[in-house]
Length: 152
Image (cartoon, rainbow, N blue to C red; front, side, top):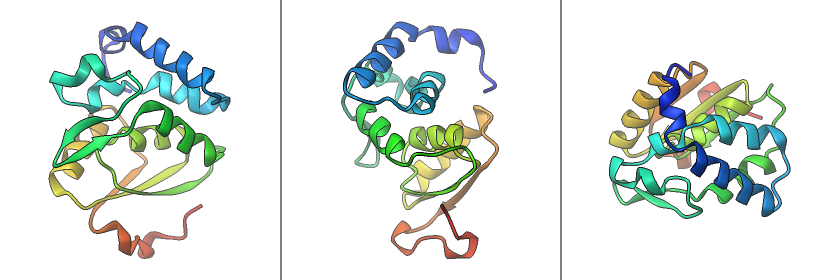
């Protein structure tokens, strides 16, 4: 990631507590835990909610959408059992937080968001963070993304 160290230090204690809670709730996949420790979750929420970003609850991200609670994100990510070689299709980019985690865990991510403003904001942030192996589409995800499949 291309961010200054103080970006990560600001909420380091909160991030550590989030990681401890996830582990205590049964998430054992070390790759998922390490990825969640690397991705600065507070950057994926509105400024007014950054102080709550590492709490185990969903938060609004605009357009009547939310960023899922950290435990749910960890559980979904661990359930995929990614090795780092996969091509992953994500339906619903949202804030881009799960997209960033998937990018840390898989070789390539293909993400679809139907809400144009959310998709554009997520892409802008993910680009700023230095994620390069993500493919974006603004589209209704119920139709999938057949032209770039198959996915793992």
